[in-house]
Amino acid sequence: MRTWPKGMAGSIAHYPARCSEIAGKRLQILREINPRLERVAILGTTPATNPYSGPYIEDLRRAASGTDLRLLPILISGPDEFGKAYAEMAKAGAQAVIVQDHFDPHRAVLVELAIKHKLAYMSGTKETAAAGALVSLSPDWSGLFGRAAVYVDRILKGAKPETLPVEQATKFQLVLNLKTAKALGLKVPPSLLAQADEVIE
Image (cartoon, rainbow, N blue to C red; front, side, top):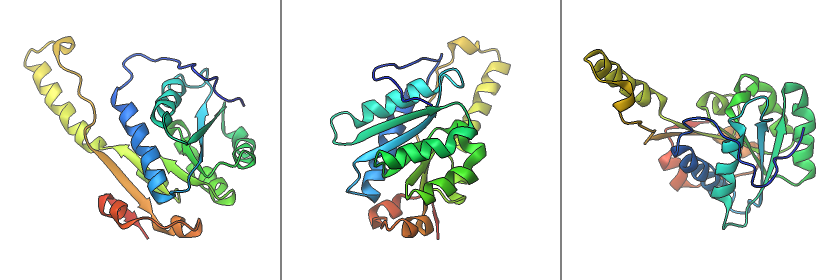
């Protein structure tokens, strides 16, 4: 387990530009729920495990620049390091954690650890919010899949794939878990509740 060296971005081909936008939205939502938020942990993979962790963390760094938020990236290889990672977050005074989607299959364990250490858990999937994370923000995948059908149709009619424009998500889905918010002693503002696509009570 190690923290991500400052300025080390990593790279993968065709990394979506909109990921930078969603990183900013995630931090903004956490600050709306907890105006006293100062330290946010990021649980990501080591570059050897999943190279996406590089740009994922750098987007969050850029989103936090110019604010008083302190980010605490913690990179691990797998589930056997969850306990140690969360203990490190708690020791560093983290109040929230943003978890890379790579670890979603282990959401039950991660949610349990977040509650144990009183960390506001931000996820990238609504299923994790339903499982007990405080909040999730994700692209509207159903809309994107619908647009994929349009591309398939155009290709079947003779369009060359390399000539078609790349589309990014323009709509995001926000899911809030009020039961978890109450357990953490946090109050979700009405303005944020009004924006939610789903509220779990």
